[in-house]
Amino acid sequence: MGSNSQRRALASPAAANSDHGRNGLDAVVAGGILPAARRTGHFVIRYDQRDTGLSTKYPAGQPGYTFDDAVDDVFRVLDGYGISNSHIVGFSLGGMLGQVAALKNPEHVLSLTAISTSPVGMDTSQFPASDEAWMEHMSVEADWSDRADTVAYLVEDARLTASKAHPFDEARIRAFLERDFDRSGGYLNTANHIVLFDVGETWQGRLNEIRVPLLVIHGTTDPVFAVEHGEALARAVADAKFVKIEGGGHEIHPGDWEQIISAIDEHAGGRTSAT
Picture (tube, rainbow, N blue to C red):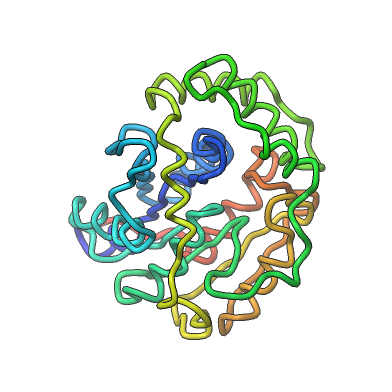
């Protein structure tokens, strides 16, 4: 692949969350926009993190990986495609992985876009807490072995974290979750992702060392990570850009795709021609 093609690559780890199987839900809120981004001329790579989708599954409660392994997976995937560097786009946990990827291997990261995420290695206790209704929902376990119960639980999760500016499309969310549940073989391994929130001391207080161009995109009504998380991340990194999605929740709603794709395309340098 030629150097121009490398500059056009957009890599994104499929967002996942240790809390109650949100991997499938994050896939629907974050995944659809990436194929749409191809029209900007970018070559898009979106992959399943470990214990999600079609990637390697580990026994429940026995994850064979760490947060840093998940960061390294970004570059392992790029290596598999023969791509030496790329623009990284990460949603939620994917945005946290992207921050550390930019710190760990900046020579392989052309730019970073962090969407609906939280600043890594920063004390966020002073920020507004996650929405009470969502936290109450998350305190209840679904029967992850039961397809119908799992899908119903995650549809409600999606409702609680949805945009305030657009109608909630339950049919779209439900249909995707049913397909993703079947494709993934269920979400029994999701609890293993608790290890991905153990960032470790190595990355504490180091966001000001990021020299990769950073774009932060955050919804103003995000009930999981309040908008203050995104604002703090943008302040911590020199010359970072910050884009607010008015009424946006902890999702990437199709009604906001145009604004988000345009911002990412501008940040990543716009169209380039492949060699």
